[in-house]
Amino acid sequence: MSLPEIVSREQWRAAREELRRREEAVRRAREDLGAERRRLPMVEVDPGYLFEGGDGKATLLDLFEGRSQLVVHHFMFAPDWETGCPCCAAFLDQVGHLAHLRARDTSFAAVSRAPFTRILPFKARMGWAVPWYSASPGDFNDDFEATVRDGGEPVERPGLSCFLRDGERVFHTYSVYDADLDELATTAALLDLTALGRRPAGSEGLRLHDEYDY
Image 1: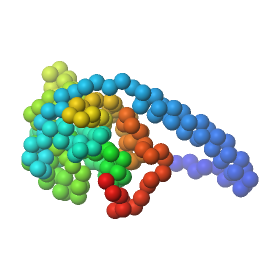
Image 2: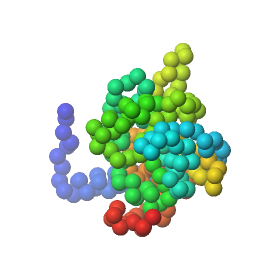
Image 3: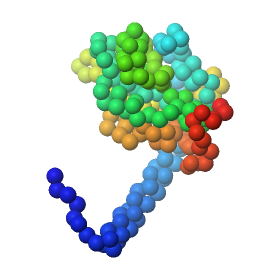
Image 4: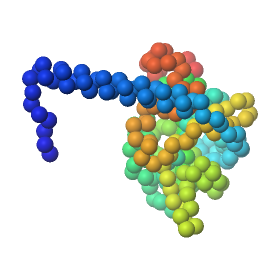
């Protein structure tokens, strides 16, 4: 592995300033893309998709836990697998404390096709407290393209899907899959995928996670 060139402090500052200008352009482009994402149309979906979780049966509407938005992590864990996908596990390891999402009226849950009896011990092994549900044997994963059929055989696919609730009605607003999940595990990145975005903007309103009132 080759190391960076050794230069003087003045040369480093000049190179850093040039890079900063490029980083600023990327940041502005990312903000523009986020605004475009929030302008995407949405499609109404069945709020009655059934799942199984720690408290038994739950509908898609239940997964909102009364909040306006829901981000679902399509965690690859097929019904016949002994453990979940290592890449999905690494992603979930990076998801921050859910209090920051919940304070912004957004819930988060992992969903897999594995039966809950397999999800539960794996979740305990990993030490996760995040809500996690089994979508089996329903069509949720197929309908949101987290399971695709390759010659008839189901193939699991990692992804994130965002939903918005208006009373009892549920709408699908956004999905992203595969390598595009890279760098999306932070609170800010997850909120940027949703229809309502960061509310309030930026770091405004951030608190210690045990100080939120939501």
